[in-house]
Length: 178
Image (tube, rainbow, N blue to C red; front, side, top):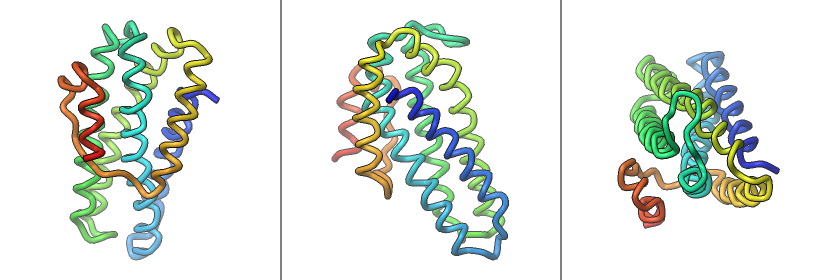
C-alpha cells in the first residue's frame, strides 16, 4: 500500500462523482443529494487526511517538483487550495439541491478541486515519490486509509492558515479536532 496511490485513487473517485452529478437529471433530488453527500464527505475527509499524514512528511522530505520551487511552496498552495475546496463545498450546501444555483456552486467546487488535483499530482505527489521510502509511504497509507474509513460521513470543516501550517502543521491540524 502506498499513500501516493491512495491519494490518486481518491482523486479518480472525486472526478467520477463530479462527472456523475453532471449526468443526473436536476429533478432527481434524491440521487443528487446522495451523490453530493458522498462527494462532500470525501472531499473534506481527503483534505483532512492529507493535512494530517501527507503534507507534514512532504515538508520534511520534499524538494519541490515540476513548477514548484520547494516543498514549502507545494504545501502552502495545497492548504490554500483545500480551503477553497472546503469553502466552495460549503457554498453548495446553501442552495436547494438540483437548482441552477446549486449546480453553479457544484461547478465552482469542481473548478477549485480540479485546479488542486492537477497541481498536487505534478508537484507534491511526484516530489514525495522521489524522496520518501517505500516503508514510509506504506506506513502513511495505513494511517491515511484508517482515518478516512473512520470518517466516512466527513469531518468537521475548518479552514487552515497556510503560513501557520508551514510553521507548525500539528497546531493547524488541531483546529479540526477542537
